[in-house]
Amino acid sequence: MLMHLTRIAASIGFIPLGGWALRAIVAALMEWQRKSELSGDRAGLLCSQDLDVALRVELKLAGGKHLDQMDTQAFIAQAKEYERTGDLRDGVLKLLNLEMQSHPFSVLRAAELNRWVDRGGYGKIVAGLYPRREDDDNAKVADDVGAARKAYRDNFDESEDPLIKGIRDGLGGVVDGVGQAASDVAESVNRKFSDWRTNSKNKYDDNN
Image (cartoon, rainbow, N blue to C red; front, side, top):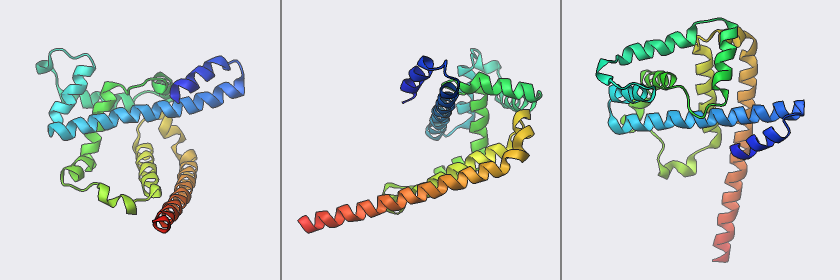
C-alpha cells in the first residue's frame, strides 16, 4: 500500500491538494513502519533478556565499531538531549528529517527501548502478562485502539521536543477527540465482526 501511494503521490504531486493529502497518508504509513522496527527491538530484548546487549545493538547500528569503548548510558543521554534541545524551527526540521525514513534513528530506538523497560512493558511480558490465543474470542478491537491511543498520548504528553511542547496545550483536546472517535469506530467494527461470526456459526450449525 505504501509503495503504491508513493508512486501516486509522485505522479500527481503537482496538484497541491492531492499532493498534500497523499503526503499525509504516506507519512502516517511510514510512521507505522517505523513503529514495527521498535516492535522488532522489543522482540530482540525479549530473546536476549539483557538490556545492555539490546542497547549495544543500537550502538552498532549507529556505526559503532569498538563497542568496548562505548557507553550505552551516554548513548541514552544523547537521545534525550536530541529530543529536548533547540527551538520550534529545530522541532520542525527533526520532523521533516524523519518523515520519510523507514527506520527510526538508532539513538531514538535505544531511548524508546529503555523507556519501554522503565514503564514496565518488558517486565509484564517476562512475567507472562500478555494476551494469549485462547483469549481471542473475548478480545475487542476497541481495547487495542484504546491502548494505542494511550501510548501515543503518553508519548505526546511526555515529549520534551520544542515543537511538541509548543503545540501541546492547543492540540490536547484535539488528540483526545480523535482518539475517542477512533475508539468508537473500533467498537462498532468489533460489534459487527462479532455479529458476523455469530451468524456464520449459526448458519454452519444449521447446515450440519
